[in-house]
Image (cartoon, rainbow, N blue to C red):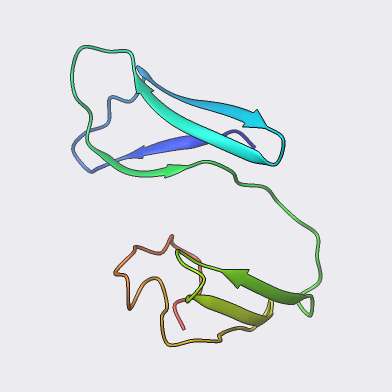
Length: 101
């Protein structure tokens, strides 16, 4: 699915914003461009979002903001592998519907 921009509350005019993705090999560079004349307060930018049909028991390994923030377990029961969780240690927001441990 294409990326999307989520504005902060009270700032809903995002029609002049666009996400530009450039891929070179295994790397993708993202740029958020405001082609309007007014600044826009942004809450979040979602670059990639896609549905999957993996069963809940699918094994999981993922790294967060840094390699110190590691999650393992399964899709149905993700578990932190380290105390450096993104939302707790780094104070990064978690999207609604994701696990907060």
